[in-house]
Length: 214
Picture 1 (cartoon, one colour):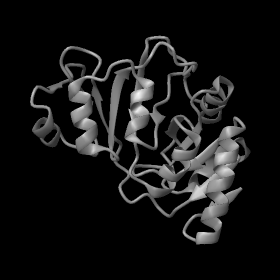
Picture 2: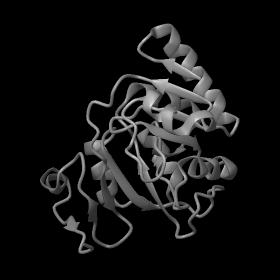
Picture 3: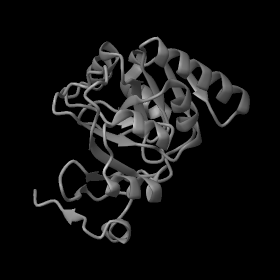
């Protein structure tokens, strides 16, 4: 079902429905500060698999979205200083960080490397859902090979009944992908430049290097 979160009454119903769906292992589509995302409980393996199946995507690990900076401390064993500085400067916002997650976490994102991509989005609807559900595996709300959805209605056209609740908040205003920084090595590496540019990142972490991968 699609809920128009631009209406306060529908927003409350939609957010409640999305939270319930995630807790039940079902899929939801929600707005972020980049594009719309399709999400599932990060700690429910069958829900994560359903997310990837809905996208017809290769089973590569999806990023994890969180609703609070403090949640990050529960996901990692030790957070590098550069990671803390970047999070302080750019979260919530269009920055995804790659970090080593704690080995004790009971989740299966489809990868056993111990690395997870984490972001805290700058969107009130997404944050309200995430603060109740906890960490969610979230990928762009589109079928593999198609354009990312800029509205929940566009996402519904692609994903249909595989998603329990669609949260519509109007067209994505800044559909630029997030910047990705790898913080798993001795030196931070810019993997993808997106919503936050290299110059701004280096104001916070001067030692940041650009990826050598073409």
